[in-house]
Image (tube, rainbow, N blue to C red; front, side, top):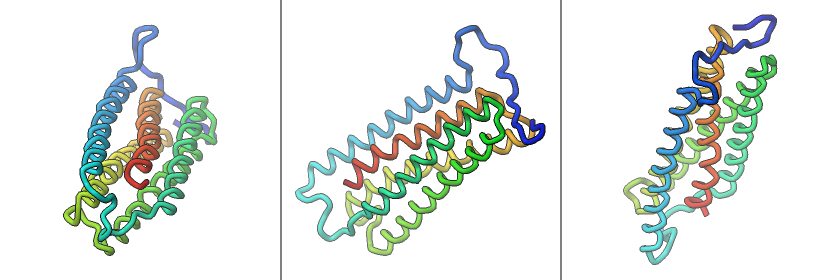
Length: 195
């Protein structure tokens, strides 16, 4: 709830002393599972790449390394803004909501720029069926895009709840943890898929 522009967080609820709140723990476990999922995708990509004589194939368009490097920077900035904004919200500082909103907007910008990249690559003939190169690109980057959209939905819900009914510290931390996972996973995927 807000009073004079300050966001108030609801109490966390009952938990054992020293314990991790249940939503935070569930998010941490989910992130661990998702790390294994992406490790499997990266392993499959490495094996597929090693079994082809030339990577990327000569007849396939090149991935936009420079523009995606800029887009990676946008996502990293988003992660910083969300982290700082969430901490300020926990301290009941009014600037926290603004930083969280800016971080969410930067994350949305990342997803939109990735979508523009996909449309351009599809127009150049890179599809799921065009080659293993295209298949791995869309599978790995697409899986990350779905995770980014889920993270944006969580951040959007957190922003809305913080502005109206209030949001628990546990929910705020869970949304931030998930977004940090999405943000810091991307440079690894960028390095493996684009370079």
